[in-house]
Length: 94
Image (tube, rainbow, N blue to C red; front, top):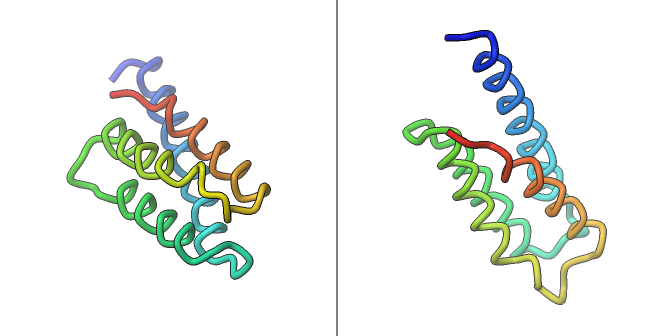
């Protein structure tokens, strides 16, 4: 593996870890409605699916999260956190 691709892989791994951290915060918060926490759990499961490549796992998680973004019951701070997670995950490519 070339140094550049190794660097890219490390950056992708950090982005995945940040996304997981944010989604786990949402999943564990009792302030956030249950349906949004369940969606965060689904996205976490998608990211942790080791049978798929990192790009596919990230794309699946983004797709799951985009489905909940316009929920009127979502607190504004949770929406910002989800946008942050999506922003990190969208940049991951295979």
